[in-house]
Length: 455
Ligand code: B12
Ligand code: SF4
Image 1 (tube, rainbow, N blue to C red):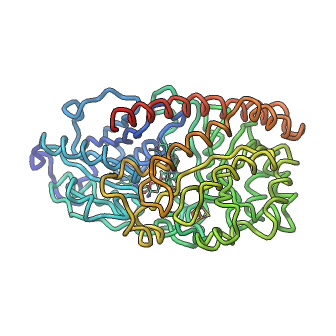
Image 2 (tube, rainbow, N blue to C red):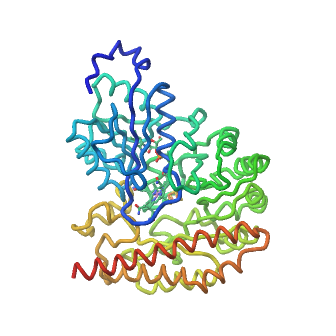
Image 3 (cartoon, rainbow, N blue to C red):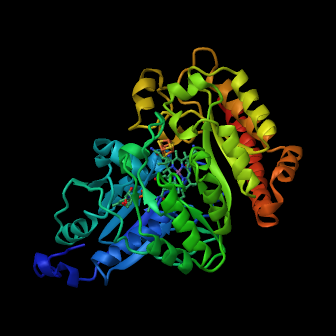
């Protein structure tokens, strides 16, 4: 689009109406994600903060039928994580071949900015807040820089996401209250991206956003819903419980519930509507926890933490990583036994060395050359293992997941949840596991048919 006709001096650029499109990429799996892509609502809001008159198009590629030629904007932003970046690159290439300008951002372009730049006019490395306004102005002038390096600002002044603006078959949206993580899990990209100091949004801003959510349920998208400050978490939960009753779930470590204020924390969380905690158990072996630097977040007695959470009527799902180079076939079976013993859901993930992590550097020599980023989803084997082939690991992954989602197991698990959470926690537990079970059956059938055609 020729820009000079509208260009009236750098300082007045905010007066011009510009068109901005933001795209959340297609996932490399079939099945719907019931959550509005948070980046669409958020980058939309950040755009309006910088350019209040901008015309915005927010596209979830899993829902929208938009073709590249239909997307007409001064600048098109695409967000991506590693699993979705292959699709994002190919869309970016198509858009640029049509003469459109593309900026890539998110966790994968931040980990590998030079790679991303091959597919984009500009790459935002890190958080967008400090650079998005300048980038939009540069786009209007037709003078994009190749890289924009975002600073980690304090979170006092974040715009409220454009809730309700993205239409689709969504069941809920996400709310974020903090960024950063002090733990050092070797397979995780979060610390490098957001830093090891937790930055918190003011409690009143979070409460305002939750009040504005129209639905009854939301996902707390923080890496750790308790944060590193138990008192702040109690304050947040207490304030949330004074508002319109809502239900929520999110990721939490197992350390905070073991703290001296653990029971107060859990009671406040349950009163604010928390119905389910997802926690990184990672591995049952102490040696494994050391290898992945994942011991600190477990506290002294993580089984006690699980019991305490459940006693407060809150459901627990544990994430377990399997198939690492030091893991054995027996670890898959042990994950099933663990679910039975603790009376929880277990979500297994095949260990995936994501770029920008310590694990990636360690596993780089073993990566399978034919596996592109679209395989880095946690259900594919992407590296050589000393004793198990990739087919064996993937087959065991699906079979373990389906055992964990067996009807008897789901029912036993429901009976294990304390009456304090009845009926919402029980209902939500069921509503999360049943679609997961259907999706897993479908994914396994697709995998088998892919294997038959490939062999
Ligand atoms: C929500 C979420 C999901 C949702 C995504 C829903 C959706 N439609 O978008 C769901 C549940 C589907 C999901 C799935 C997975 N996820 Co996820 N997810 C997250 C989570 C919790 C929040 C991301 C988010 O939306 N943040 C809110 C937005 C507003 O902020 P943001 O994305 O950080 O964006 C900021 C900057 O990055 C930048 N930015 C981002 N995009 C763009 C784009 C442009 C153009 C610009 C300018 C700037 C910009 O600006 C923003 C403001 O500063 C993160 C954890 C985290 N802390 O980031 C993990 C995370 C992104 N997920 C991760 C992973 C690994 C997965 C899975 C592979 C998990 C698994 N093994 O099962 C699957 C992949 C799905 C698949 N098979 O393809 C990793 C990704 C690591 C990586 N290198 O790719 C993360 C970082 C978690 C972690 N601990 O490592 N996930
Ligand atoms: S605790 Fe969670 S967010 Fe923090 S480093 Fe470990 S996996 Fe990443």
